[in-house]
Image (cartoon, rainbow, N blue to C red):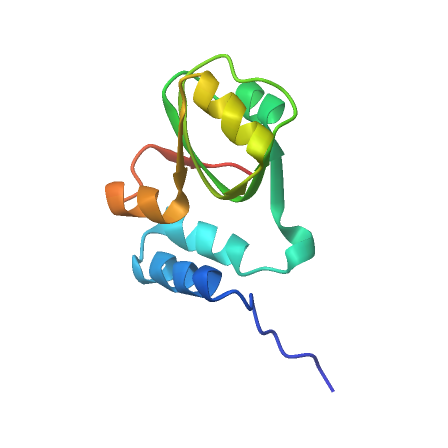
Length: 118
């Protein structure tokens, strides 16, 4: 007997996954697929990795949690599912913007110039 794939039990996450999938845009479908995966495969991105792999004024989506280890030395727009308190504080002091994935989807439904951060 095989296991049934149920996806996340959190209502907010299920709704977000559905909205992302309905856009039919490749980037949002990729984020939706990553969010619907198992919890043990969720993305956890530290600030030092984000800082190292991005440039000034980049817009990135983290389909998981942003953690507060490291610093950011340039301005970014970061959209994520969740964010730690220390990461939130460091992002705001660097002059960067922190959004939810839903807010970024409303601002940029086509996903132009948005990078998915694994």
